[in-house]
Image (cartoon, rainbow, N blue to C red; front, side, top):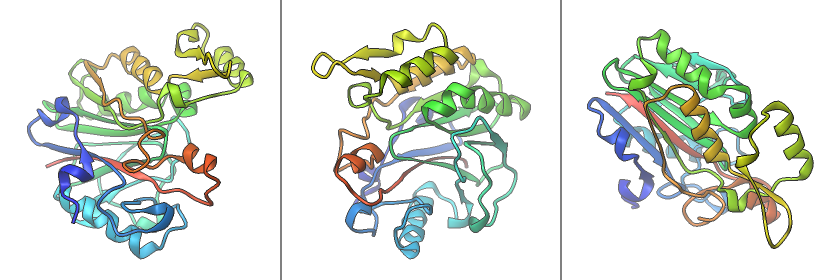
Length: 261
């Protein structure tokens, strides 16, 4: 069996906070097969539901919670952040793209396959958060919404530690000129997050860099990026864009989660 240290990656700054456990889980160590091999944690995929449930149970065990305490959302690329006080029926996941809590034993999970997962903690306040930040969510304010929701529970931005997990890197994230125009229209002055590939002549977007910038704007005190590219690490991480380039019919989702012990 794949060991926990192969199944997940931790951010050192979050790992240093007493009373908080977290993990950016990879695609390794699960029971799914085919394009979902092996730790697919996405209920929205077309993977066998029993396999997804077993995979999530393995993640929950590593985090030290019961499977029904590992929560995830119906993600919409929105700026909606929920405050969570109790678990919900897994079949009735609320629509949002971030969660915060001060309740021990609730593991907040976000599912990704190129978008940026961001885990947050204010250890002094005992408040945590988890956000799914694709470009649309980041642009519309999901990072700021998460920080604001944490503040309402007693967190202070300058005390918050945030880590950006595996996401598509700029070198792999080719976008069209219309994308650039639309982005710059909504976010003037963001040219620094685009480069032109010398080979293709096409623009590439720096999603993790942009998310880090939004974290800084929100006043987050400690910001780190694991620097792992979902597209580039095929045996280790799921990637929606890579699945499209391979002509695959579906794709797996990795989970990133955090819990107050």
